[in-house]
Length: 365
Ligand code: COI
Image (cartoon, rainbow, N blue to C red; front, side, top):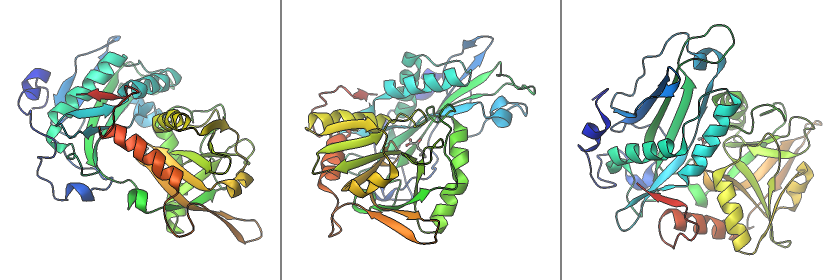
């Protein structure tokens, strides 16, 4: 099927969500790569984007001089499609991911994908892989991963003349094992920075994640699945988690607090939660969060497309004198914090079509 036309391939497989043969039950999926029917691909050549093509083979034939390989001219996105009870499949806020990718392209001198092309390509690739959308009620989603990168050769430091945009899809469950019912333990990362204030932390470029691989692995070896970065300039303010944004809840003050920093990635899940929290009567504060303020949060959440709303049970800080300080969050009896539950339920109910989508966030494929 490689190279075959979009319409030819798309018409072959209009099946139902959750009908693909899987080696793992739908409700036990984690966050791993799995093969599906196809990905969608567009090439930018001679100053314009070509037509989208569905491609079966999960390989690309890439020039050895591609700027993505040498100079990291590459960005990506993450969004999800959900099956509803009526059998429809809906993508959550794809226009927002499109805008964020356009910002990444602007910062790295890559040609942007127009929003209508982006959203239609997402719909098309989800439709061609519809049987891999986890069924309604399974708790899973079809993760949609758009990539855009310089595929043309340059060896002097400059942008490529040719680009590739592709979208792959993977059925997923919880990013952190146990999901909502298993709070993760975090480590305050103080030996490394994620991103400089005027660098590329606010755009979703591949290199930001390469920079986190070592700190992430070192933290995991010490028993901390998630790492929390401080701001690179002063090393005193909470920045973001390795995989996701930071949210602190102070129940007495009724506040939802999230860092305002030029180097934090603007999470679409966080943006959605801020809207929901405001409508639920919480005071939403986007501001500097001194690390000492961790003591004042009753609940801490890691929020993002992949992690959704993951409760953080604790954050450990290793102090210079060799001692450690552990900030603990959530209910004393091991229950999930009430505000975490409320926010999680509201956003998941919208995504799963359990409540009316008054915000207009769901886009039917
Ligand atoms: C996402 O949440 O979609 C991301 O891209 C984060 C990644 C570490 C899985």
